[in-house]
Length: 255
Image 1 (cartoon, rainbow, N blue to C red):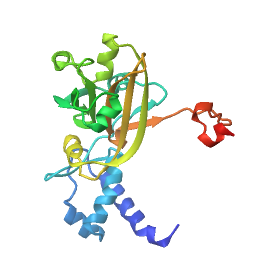
Image 2: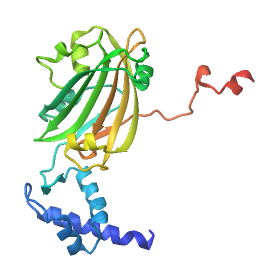
Image 3: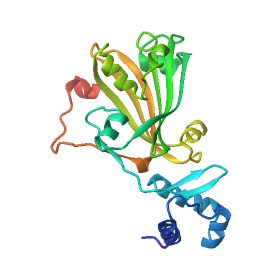
């Protein structure tokens, strides 16, 4: 391993020892004090601390400080079946709750109109909320749906935070599948504020389109997860990839 990486490794090792020795709920020394003690810049210190926050070992509160937290249960799931956070948490006995909820009517911009296969300017419902576990935010979810699929009145009572569970319980329209893109992203100001983390911290983001059985997209969503609280996996078959004829390059189809 390159010699230049050793100082950062030593920094992470030093932080790991400090965190292990600090009782849960206690605050770590301030960033300037820690940076002086460990002989690094504050920028380098913050970069190293993001690793431990992603693992769920510390929690940074803007303007307050950095706190050691209790080890948390990890919500683990395969990606083959779409399930809500509430369903996954119930399976492992972890209590989750709905945090801040914002429901508003918006006009479809070009991006959302394309995603939902509707005309720009069409009325949509945007449902933004925070999901909490063990007294802290762990996920920030945004669902955008046409008004004929979901109305604000549908969320006035009994809404636990899962649009998916609400649609499944209602049964109309019947759902078929979800196409999901997975990215690692830096938290924007809005998302960082919702999750009580630092802007720029790395999150796992799902961008999903939920399809009804008639092939129509009825929900376009953005889900942001704290990495230390979620673990996703996929089961893959081993063997040659057979590309469907419709997915083959145009030149290959003509040959």
